[in-house]
Image 1 (cartoon, helix red, strand yellow):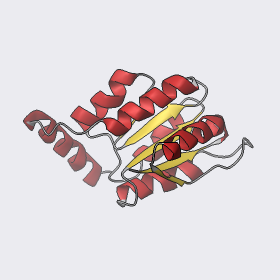
Image 2 (spheres, rainbow, N blue to C red):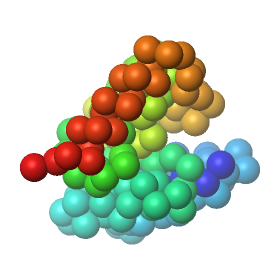
Image 3 (cartoon, rainbow, N blue to C red):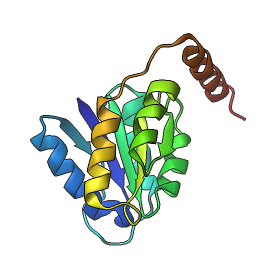
Image 4 (cartoon, rainbow, N blue to C red):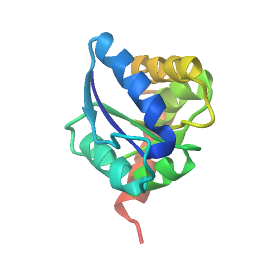
Length: 149
C-alpha cells in the first residue's frame, strides 16, 4: 500500500518511527515532511500528504501534529479527504469500515509509539464495509464536500 505522511515538529519523531515500520512491512511511504524537530507549521506538511490521497497518488494518509487536532483540521480542508483524529484501535478500523476514512490523524504527544503503530496497522488493514447505510452516509459526506461554502 502507498501511504502519504506529513507532520509538523510535534509529530516528527513518531512519523519517523511509523515510517520505518511501514517500509519494513513492505509499504511505500510518500514523506511530505517535516524532516526535523524544528518548529514548523503543520498545514505546510499535512496538506500535501492529504492532497496525495485525494489525487489517488497514495492509498491512505497518516498525518500528525502534537495533538492530532490541527493535522485533522488541515487535512479536512482538502476535497476528497475523510479524516479523523484517532487515539484508539476501535476507531481506527470503525472509521474506515463505516465512514470511509482515508486519512488518519495522530497526536505525536498523545499516543506512544506502540499504540500508534497498532492504530496505523489497524487503519491500513481495514476496508470500507460497503453496507447500504454506510454507502448512503459516505455519499452524504461527499455531497457536503462538493458543496462547501
